Length: 342
DNA sequence: CATCCACCGGAAATGTTGGGAC
DNA sequence: GTCCCAACATTTCCGGTGGATG
Image (cartoon, rainbow, N blue to C red; front, side):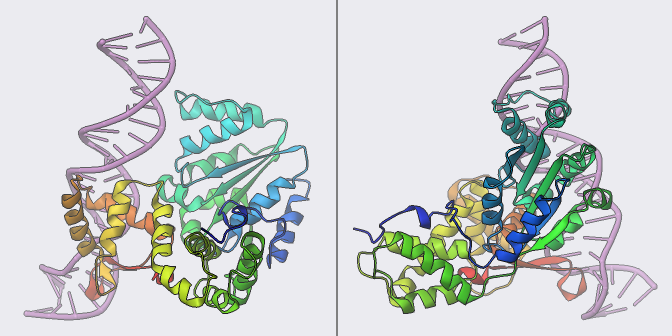
C-alpha cells in the first residue's frame, strides 16, 4: 500500500512543463541561444538547483536545424568515452570500441561541418577531474565555422576554472550563467507542486512539507526523500514520519548516487562514516578503508588512488573536505560527511 | 636555520582490457 | 589463436607545502 498516485513527477528524470523560480536563468539561456552563432555557456551552481533540468528543458525547445547531444560526464569521464558518445549521438549508429581517439575526432569533424550542433556536458567536473581539459581543448579548436555550441554544466566552479587551461578558456569564451541555492520557501513550492501531481490528495501534511523544505536545499535529495517516504507508508505523511524515514532515505540516496561507481567508492564512503568525531584526516580514513577491505575480501587500492576517489565523493556532494597546505596539520585533507546528509 | 609533520598530486611506470589484422 | 596497439586503471615515485619545534 502506498500513497503514490502517479510515479512520474517524483522521479529524478522527470522534466516538468514549467520550472519554478528559474525564470531569469532560463531567459538568459534562451537569449544566448538566439544569437547567430551558437554560444558557449558555463552553467554553474550548487547541486540540486535545477541546472540539469534547465538544460534538459532547453534542448527540447531548440530550433529544428540544431542537433543536440547530451553527455553525462559521470559516465563519460574521458575524452575518448565522451567522443564515442558524441559520435553515436551524431550518427545514430553504435560506435564500435576499436577507434582511436584521433580517428574518432576526424569522423566527428566531418559530421559537424554543415549542421549546427549543441553539446551539453553535464557534470563536467568529473571529466575535468579525471581527464583534464583535453576534450574541451579539442572542441574549442574544431569550432572554426562557429556552428558548434557547448554548454558546460558544473557544480564546482572554482575547481572547474582551475582545471581548464587559459588558452582553452579564452578560445571558448563561455558565457557564465549561475543558479543560486533555493530558499526553503522555493523548495517548499517545488516539492508541493510535485506532491500535488503525484500523491493522493491530503496524504501530505502542510507542516511535514515545511519541515522537509527546511531540512534540504538540494531539491534532488528532497524529492528522493519524499518519494521514499510516500512509497513506504500508507498513513498520511507528517513531520514525524519524515523524521523516521530520514536516515534510510538519505542512505538510499547515497547508495543510488554511488551505484554507478566501484565497490571501492562504496567501501571508502562506508569507512568515512565510521568515525564519531569529524573532521578526520585522510590518513586515518585510508587506514579504516583498508580494514573494511579486509573484512570484505577486497584488495585495497593504493592511497594515491583513494585520494582521487575522495575527490569523486566530494564532487557528488557526499563529503566536505578542507585541504591544509602545511602548518601544524602538515599538508593533508580533512574530511567530514556532508552536513546535508545527516 | 634545519627538520619535521602527513599527506598532496603531477608524472612516469606498470597492469589490464578488448578490438583489429593476420 | 596470437600478436599488436590504444585506452584505461592503478601503482610507483617523488618533489612539494609552511608553520611549529628544537
